[in-house]
Amino acid sequence: ATSAKSARLPSWLLRPSAAPLNEEASQHLTHPGSKSGVLILNSGGLHSFTNSSLLNNLASTLLRATNVAKDMLVQNFFTSYGYVEGCAMCFALATSSSSSIALRNKAEQAVLCYANRP
Image 1: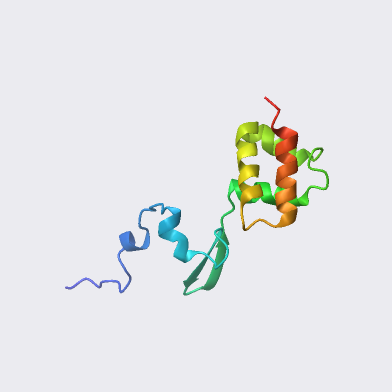
Image 2: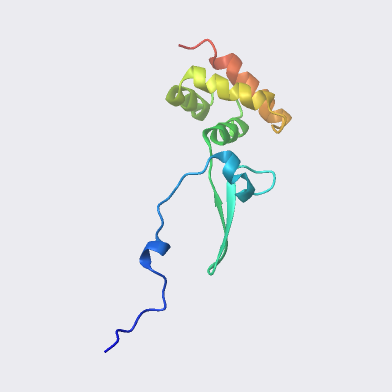
């Protein structure tokens, strides 16, 4: 008597171990002009996933703030991640060629506001 074999793939092929890719190795997977998303095509259709970085979160927080010096979300960001790190990220946003003028101005305001904090 022969046993019936499944036409399915072995289970170990369906669940491979996850291996992180560095940004240079995975940049071809991202949307053009955006480094925070990936498109996946499978039998269920086309799926879009986004991965938000701390820098993207700070940029969104700054753009939503009407008064950077008094905005609680901006203050919480600097408190949570540290004033040195927050100022470094604001400097990166303020000097990036891909940042809008509004984002550059708000990043500069945040640095001037929080640079003298402990």
